[in-house]
Amino acid sequence: MKTAISEASIKAMLTREKALFIQRNPKSKGHSENAARNWLRGVPMHWMVDWGTPFPLFIERAQGVDLVDADGNSYIDFCLGDTGAMFGHSPKPVVDTLLREGAHGFTTIRPSASAVKVGQLLEDRFKLPAWQITATASDANRAVLRWCRAITGRKKILVFNHCYHGAVDETYVNLDHGKPEADRALIGEPNDLTQFTKVIEFNDIPALEAALAPGDVACVLAEPIMTNVGMVRGTLWQTPLVNLPQCAILALGRARDCPVVRGGQLAVGKCMGASLSFDHRIVNGFPASRFMEFLAESFNNPAF
Image (cartoon, rainbow, N blue to C red; front, side, top):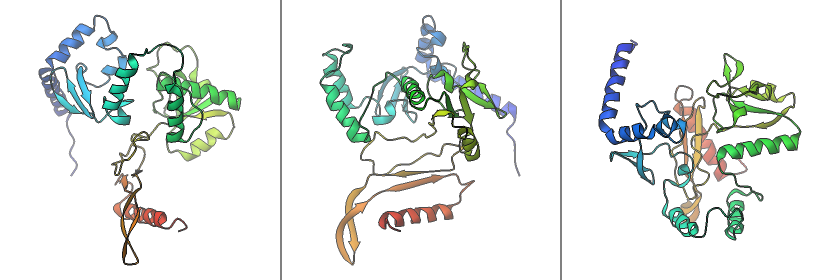
């Protein structure tokens, strides 16, 4: 028998948790109140208060996946926002490099000899020969859109509903009951963003085909994956997270040498970990297991 949680119970829970949050974080509360004098909504960037808490936590330090706030409370950071997602917070090699290079100057507005080596490393890691650096991911998306429009001669772009692409105005278009409209959170925008931005639901293949059919789209922006670990080398096993409306996601570890038995003899072979996470409401264990068996057989016998 289904039971419903009453509105009163929800309000009581929220009131209790709010009081506990305030009790646990008096220093963060004080910092927030003092910062409000000079910062909009008391934070350097307005989205830092988009957490549903009475005030934001002020972080004292971060190392690896660990955060410690101003009141000494410790947390495991499952967000690892932006560059922290690559190597964790404050990895020692990065800290040492910043300390060393900072003494040589940060804002010369000229390349250094290190740029040659960095370019070579980028090509080696990502197998792409030509690179440009931007200050933020938002700037990178803006640059990509300009290049795509210049190359294709087309003006329109395509995004997926409610996906995030940084502070790029023309990507702030959502679907409201199937109709494209500018995101209400984007204030002060004078242009009709729907004129050059198409938006569809993620995983809607017919809608994607229809949107691309006229041949007027210069670029498709897609950033729906939570578990992007492209910068992390050497990972043996991973636990991928399903990001709705996806129904499954596969993670592959690093191929490595390991002992295997061939023809009754011990030999050195290649092993690689694979993990599949799936939504059990859509896929049950049997086809998921069959898929993993097929994957393993395909790796063992490429011509399979």
